Length: 221
Length: 221
DNA sequence: ATAAAATTCAAACGGTCGTTTGAATGAATG
DNA sequence: CATTCATTCAAACGACCGTTTGAATTTTAT
Image (cartoon, rainbow over all chains, first blue to last red; front, side):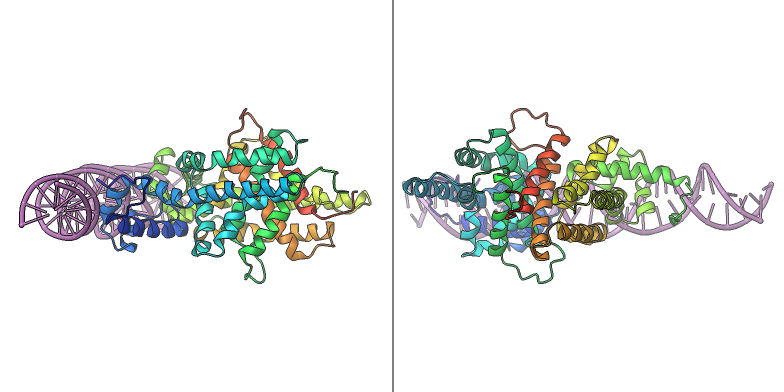
């Protein structure tokens, strides 16, 4: 049995194997999807014995959850941090929260990833997770995202108290869709020069979704 | 060898089997994804011999392409028809194309589906196709969508000649993402009453994406 | 050093996979 | 009726699947 991961991070021998498996699984899942990726392929890519996958993660499904949680946990924390900073800078400047500031905070993990090796991982992983059949991923998405999303919905409600919560939920929903589209395809199909950076795409994504969420506002004319 | 489908629709005995396979494959793929759906499960659900799948479609991949093409072909035609109607009604009213009218035409196939049995199929199938690993679906998507998309980009350029084509491509890209999100999840996660109709979602989708594409326009203040 | 626990390993389990084969059946044509 | 072609069928092919086992090995703690 694997040692239960305690809160204090005392690294054991098996952690190296564990992380090698996670790394290999991650990249294979991003490329081929979950169902099309076998444990044997993962073990081979990780230079690890096949049985190690079950020893460390219990099942293929458990491995998927671990792959997902390893990346999404920090993303959730970064999003809450960014929202907190957004709130404090809004209050000290005397002005309230703006939709643009809130969305920029929501996308902060991707800006952060651009300065690390995560740039080649986070977008593809998030896109693929959303793409898998909901029966596989819905419980995981609820675990990872529901708390963060409720915080952001509250912030949006402060930025636009005139809009009913239901309406904000819908617009947030559509925003997620645009985000996934960017993460999955990077640039639109049929784009002439395909050397578009994530930075560029994110700027355009923010403009698009801010407009979609602010829709119908007459306060800036 | 199956009879090559000629342009004239002379129905043969095998067409019944062929369509039973397509129907069964379609619903299973929508529910579980392509990789997780076996030919045996399809043949069983269709009450058909396993070998019939290879006889009629050559391979599993060929079956996927057929499932996709059967629904997307008419969708592309309906979209071009709707755009043509949109153009003619715009020119006879003397006013030019509007972004809203163009997008409404683009979503027309879903409105049409609401009055047929396709309402339970089209949204789920399109969402799943977009979700499969791009290596599987990218050639198919190019075949089915590229022509329609270029027509719609031209129309958007007429509606908003002030925006560069590149910018319109990006905004159209984000619009597709919002559409897929609606088709895949219907309503936002965590919605209180989950009895939202596709009709309702489409209306909200149009409002959101029109605002995103019209963004920065000062012509309606 | 010794005992205990954690981890790795090769091998196998029963199943399911996509695909192929070749004979049986059906329909269409002369 | 005879013949050709299209279609269905049961059976099997080899390959790969997720999972389990039990012994060997390494690490950790006494």
